[in-house]
Length: 405
Image (cartoon, rainbow, N blue to C red; front, side, top):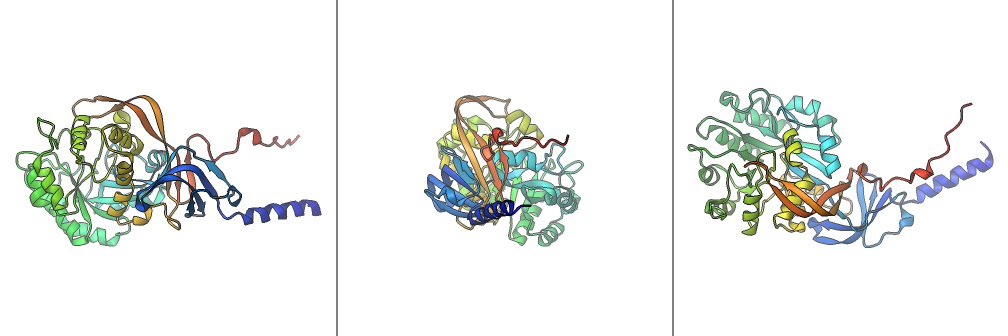
C-alpha cells in the first residue's frame, strides 16, 4: 500500500472516529409519554443507547442520517399478550414482531413450570426480540391438551419456577379451563401473590364462574383481565352501556388488556366502551397464526382499530408502550430518554380508504381513512426492519464489480 493510500485510509478512519453518533433520526414527531413529549425532535443513537434528543442535532455528528419527516417516532412497542410456544398456532417472534415495531413481547401462557425451560432454550434465547413469559398455571402450559389438567396446576411448582427465572417470567396466566369452579384461578392468584407478580386471566364466563364474581371476589389489585372487548365476554349490555361491575372492578385495581386475537375483539363492544371512556389499560395482540391471517392482529393494526373506535393517539401509544413497560417491571424500555436503551419504532400514519376487521361474532368491517404501519424498527441500537430502505444508500452507489478475468 502506497503512502498516499495509507494517508487516505488514516483520514477516513479519523473522520469516522470524530463522529459522535451512529445514526440520527431526523424530522420525526417524537411521541414519548414517559417524558410527556409530542413534538418534532431529532434522536441520536450511539451503540445500544439513545445519546441525544433535541429539536435539531447537527448532521455532521453522525455516521448515518435517516429522514423520518412526518412520521411518528416512539419507544419500541411492547406486546403484553402473544403466543410463541405450546399453542398449536404459535408463531416465531422475530419475523412477526420486529416488522411491526414490537421490540418486547410477553408469551401469554404457552409454557408452564414443566415446559418453561424448553421454551427458553428453543425460543427465548434465540430471538432478537426481547421475549418474556407469563407462566401458565397448568404444568405443561398449552402443550398437548392444553390447560385442562387440574392435577398439574401447582401453585408451589409455579412459584419455584418464577423464583428461578424472575428475569424472564413476569407473572402467571390462567385460561380456557372448561371444568367447574375456581380452583385453577385461585391457584394462579396464589402463585402471583406469593411471587410479587401479577396474574392475567382469559376466562369466558359460565354459570358457575360469572364475570362479576371473578373480578370482584377472586382477582387481586394489579391482576389483568385480557380480551376486554371480546364479544364472548361482553363488557357492555343490550343498550351498549358498560356493566357496572366493570367499573367496580377497575376501582378495585383490576386492569384490562385488549388481547385482540382471532375471536376476542368486537368493534361494537370497543366503540361503546371507548365512548364511555372505559379505555384499556394495555394494548396487546394475542398474536398467533389465526389472528394474523383473519384479523391482521399486529400491534400497529390493533392501534389503528382503537384509533378508529375513538381513542386518541397519545393514549394508544401510552398503553402500547409506557404502561406495559411499567407493568412488566422494565420502565427503561418505555422511554426515549437520553441514555435509555435504543428500542425505537418509526410509525407512518397512512391516509386512504381502508377496511379494518374485527372478530368474535363473525368478522365485521369498519371503514377507516387511516392505517398505522411500521416503517422502521430499531432494537438495542440496531436497525432490524426498514420497510422502505430509508437507512440505505441509493442503488447507484453500488461499485462496479471486480473483474476476475
